[in-house]
Image (cartoon, rainbow, N blue to C red):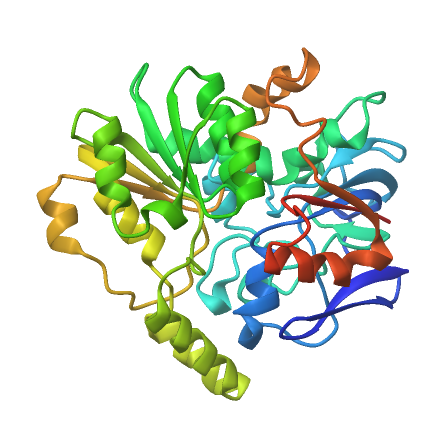
Length: 393
């Protein structure tokens, strides 16, 4: 089969790799019909190379049709149309029973000290082949997959794999009071959808980015937008002027480790990238290598007693945090990978009754699998209006 493989920093290629097969009786094989390129895939493309190996198959946002099931798979049959969330979860352990699917005790990557295994996302998360491919082996298929109805196009459901539940959790974790306000830092796919979810729930939403196309998308959905290029030295002041001098009730950081405007940490990331992988891996696991501009901005922007929801991916183990300010402002922090299936029942009615979140036209680019390398590059460089790419194997 054809698959998108990682070959090095800023080097992904479409190659022919062996077809997956049933390895355990709880597996299923899915023929992929759509698969997204995620903003966190760019971390693999740019920063997390020490945890990758040439030939790793990328992708964690697929959907398709079940081709084959193992003898112990329940609830999923050949021919079913399914979305495959980015995390692999058994559905029966203590953590899954708490709806903390990203902490599944059956698939936890214990040798790395990490949570549930993820598709296509480094050896930290199990080095499981991903879904930017023609076929995908899905472990624990009875719980991991989400069955969806026939009829609507893939765009209606594919974002259940990551974008929708991740954005939904970011809003839930932000604890925005009824009729309250939230600043969303970063209007990439997750930030954009978080704005839509928060606005749908009746909150005032202020979106911040520095890419004109992304600002325009937010503005078109009724979001108040601020161009970071115009407020880089005083974003907090600008937002306090809009909110009676306090700041917003909540902030969602949808940027993460590669924030704009952190030259020192950018240099640390670049220098780490020059080290041998075995050395760089240890450095990244023990050092503060994240570019924290977005997080620092969140601490500044949120009102006293407010909540920050971190949904952008961070990777450093010794990042310097402004603890005095966090403590003094009495800020609450919530964060973590989205527990996808926890939110499916909340989101599905919005996909079946109209399209209030605008998923049908959310993707900016739909391309054949062979064009993945080109679109990875454009997405990383923020060119050609790329916000969300769907690959069509």
